[in-house]
Picture 1 (cartoon, rainbow, N blue to C red):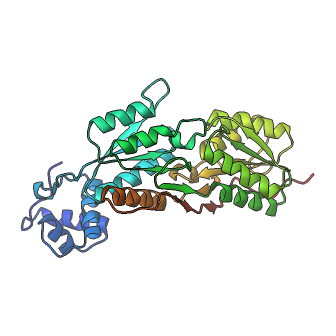
Picture 2 (picture 1 turned 30 degrees about the vertical axis):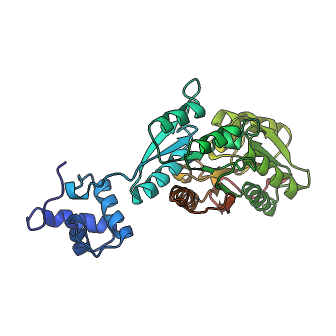
Picture 3 (picture 1 turned 90 degrees about the vertical axis):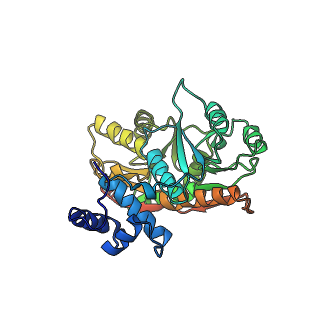
Length: 341
């Protein structure tokens, strides 16, 4: 599709209107942005550019800025929708500051986190954002991040605090999340509640378990498995054997597996067993049943991570501590009053 018509042509009118509607600004504002005029706030200008991109129009040459630099984004994989959700917001925020994101995804048998970091540094990235990386693994050597800092590359870490790493961290309050989930289920009359989570070596898992056990005073049942549909299914099968009428899951993907395990028993969600997920990426409002889950504040966390990284890049003092964000319980159709008896 060609670029947006220059002001003055008849063909531009519907296009200007479309762009203005998408960006939620006036046509006059769109015209000022497209013609490179001053007097438009940076955030408004970014909305107009985003509207151009969403509607499939090429940007006029005068609006194609030189990148302020490359920022690496290292994530575990793309199969869990929460990771693309984070990546998209991080990329949007970076683009708003003029930076070009470079997405690096790990895969079993493929490049490791260390391999990806080496490649990014060789390409001269200005900084790196790590999402659920080796920093969250208590068995991994944190010295790799000290070496990265020694190479002069600023970085920020999302999901998984490690006091031995000198950098800004951004995390959801995982312990609060499981406490909130347990309280919700207890209010519905559930007494035997299970937790299906990933491997114990990960910091977010340990925090989820700590919140869960503290809220239930040791009366809950915990099953460690993999963060996947199959992992959730296997863990829930064991939790059902233990008599649980409700299952809190460490991710929404695991919750899908939990629902599958319940149905394999000839039972119903939520009539017989309630299921709570964790993440709330966009797809999970449309599952059968729609999933009750703990929402990670993705936009707030991603924005905070990018802001901290840009401060580091600018040489400004940033607290090398953990910025913690509160999850939100989203009530849908996968939880209900505990079955009688």
